Image 1 (cartoon, rainbow, N blue to C red):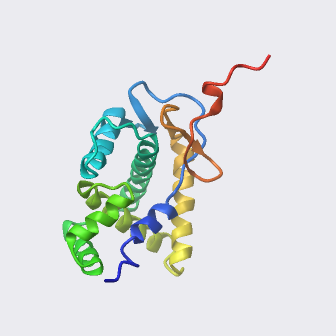
Image 2 (cartoon, one colour):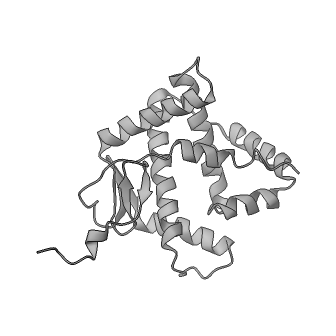
Length: 199
């Protein structure tokens, strides 16, 4: 069984591991705000609970790392979707199905695909969304750097998302972390939230 290509999505997610500095607090009830788009805390909770359920854990299991990882992915997916819409990139159900079939063939079975994704904190119900992210990023890369190799295309997507993130003033609720500008991903919550104020 060849699983080496299956986690290509992880590479794509890493390629689009973007963020930006957000200083103020997002709208109350929002886990993140990307321009006019809110990612509601309830939506994040549902995504996290889907993973916990697939892992066989109680839905109220505290897992701050999973919450931050999930929010990170949701924000990046939103940024990629905005860029895709601006570029006229449309992903069909046929493309999603074809990619899923390819994953099945690589892993040997659908259950094995689901197991591999679940190890990365992605529930079976969320795989299609990751495939869309993957396909959108690939097509954007080809549009932004048509003569470049995959790495150059990935870098072009990163640059475009960085510019968009800045333009939209993306913010993450301190409850889930902060945008780490240097690593361009959701990082730990700021220490000063609980640290005593220096005199």
